[in-house]
Each structure stands twice: as C-alpha cells, then as structure tokens.
Image 1: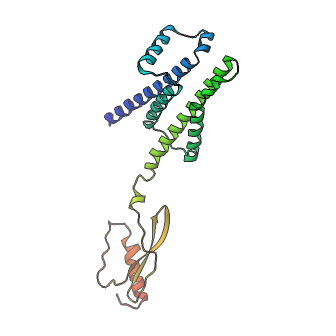
Image 2 (image 1 turned 60 degrees about the vertical axis):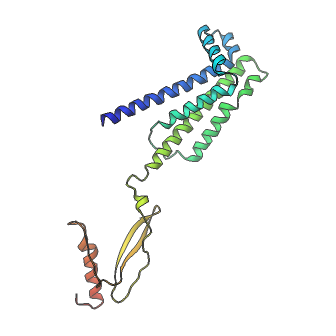
Length: 233
C-alpha cells in the first residue's frame, strides 16, 4: 500500500515537471518572437539570450514559430495522461472538442498578430494573450479528456455490464410448467422476464445459502402453482 502511494506521488511529480517544461517552452517562444518588445521593456537577460541562441544553433528550436509550440503541446498532453481527477457530469465530449478547437486556433494560428500594422506593444500583448488563452484551453481539454476516459473505464466497477445478457422475456406455459417472474439488467435497462420450467418432474434443484430467499422466491411458487393446476404435491 505504501509502495503504491509512493509510486503515485512520484508519478504526480513527473507530470508536474513535464507541465512546467511545457510552460517554459511557451515562455521561450514568447521571449524569442517578441524580442523587440522585450528589449523595449528592458526585461531581456543576457544569459537567457545566449542559452536560447545555443538551443537554436544546435536543435533549430526557433527555426519556425511552431516548433516550440508543438513541443509544448506534446509535453502538455503527456502530463495530462498521468493526471487523476474527480468526474464532473458537466464534462462531455462536445465540450472537450470545443475547448480543443478553441485552444488549437488561439495557440497555433496567431502568428499573423505579430505582423499587424499596430504599435509594437499592442501586437505583442495580443500575441501573449492569445497564446496564454490557447494554452489554457488545451490544458482544460486535456484534463477533461483524461478524466472522462479514466472514469468511463470505471463506470462499471462490479462488471455488471459485461456480465449481463439477454434473458427470456416470454411467458411459456403448459400443463406441467412452473413460471417464475424475474427482473434483469441488460444494456443499461431493467427488463421483466420469466424463468419457465416446462417439465419440473424431470428434475429441479434450488441452491442458495441460508436466508437467501429460496423458499420465498422459488419453493412457495412451486407449491402454489402446482396446487392451482390440481396436483397433490
């Protein structure tokens, strides 16, 4: 039990680390492609500049505005896979799809904002706001999808769905039969059915633990129905 708890804590730390790296890549993207504004605001850091230049020279990380965003989204998706949460009835696949589409559009399709004929500060703020909003939407979609998938797997913890099957719903009678009414669960619905013992004289056995209701549910029905049909028992 303690080992399992330790494993869960370790997994949570790994997921937090992946998400932190993902956010760092988004910040690097903003820093690199909004560098003019960073210089104008006086928030540039020489060490960071050299590190990013080395990244670009060795890994071509900033050869396209999409590269860092793609890496960030991949790490974000991995971090969402290991996240656990409480299921919410308001979380639905259409809602997840809406958040995913909105996040994709805001996060990936906003490069043109940097080319707008507006003051530098205005374009940079628009770019930062759309990137942040898109990232939040993608994060929400990932968390919701992960929770919904994991909880859907646990909707049937006692395996009732897989163990259920269609049973006899017709009432079949003859001069010897004993018919026991039933109620069974199948395909997320309750159905009324019948257990039809058409030839009880061949052999009948009732098994159950003491107090399980054998006499009430089966034996009494046998006696009642056989007497109604004129048998002396």
